Image (cartoon, rainbow, N blue to C red):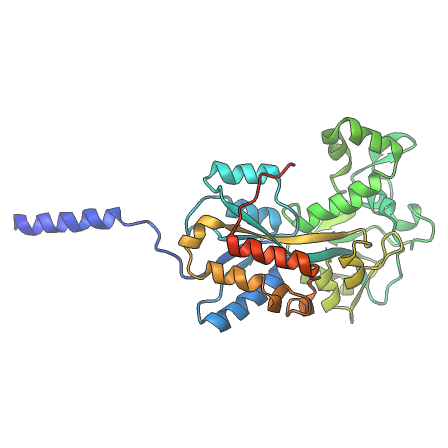
Length: 345
């Protein structure tokens, strides 16, 4: 009996020494709603080619995805963070604090943020200044920063429609929201010398005054960009902010507005002439290559010519491909898994 109990105790000890998590047999990616349709398409093709389980892809917004990604090491956390903006220095440091230290940054292509409306609605010829004045919580007026007083677009710019300012867009966790604030709101505000002087003297003060969006004209509509598209067709006069791919998929229902005289399309986003163009990324946890089955193969599929190359299957979903030289460079990063440096800001 004693011998039996001793064996049982030994087995229990061995069981207790086993790792809390078995190695995961599928890839897990989380983050940007803009990158989501591209990541899911790659996941489908990866599964067909390899016979492995399709990767789990979650749409949490760039900030939410990176936060989860940075939560720790091992298979209890995502292998990949999908992002529609560069990782911030504060996020990189948060990762390091949790032991996530070897991160590989891969640029997958370009996207544009669009301001769209129902196809049968009026046209808005926006300038960046209009977007700042229409959507910022605090605006400069007669030399002073005041609570946004504008209620209709024609109060802001000559020739703009008289519709009420009502814009549906992504929440604060979204990379699209972050990029829109930087590329549209901040850029529009900087057209005013008084605000540019504030920025030059005190960047934090500039962001405090400019970045918050108004609560009575901007509506946080969640991470589902397709839901915003649906809202535009049901709410005459409203506008929506989301990634180019959702506009391209729904041109029978909605239309994108020009900004600074340039309409969003594949050519203007690729060459940078459209003011709200941006880059898209995936961030890979290098340590998880030894933990997650198929992670390297999934990343290889993402950067393949067939997926993100010119004419690749993601281009048909709205991704704007990188120039050939840049695309080859990102393939090399994926092969060598060269880790990124700490961001400057």
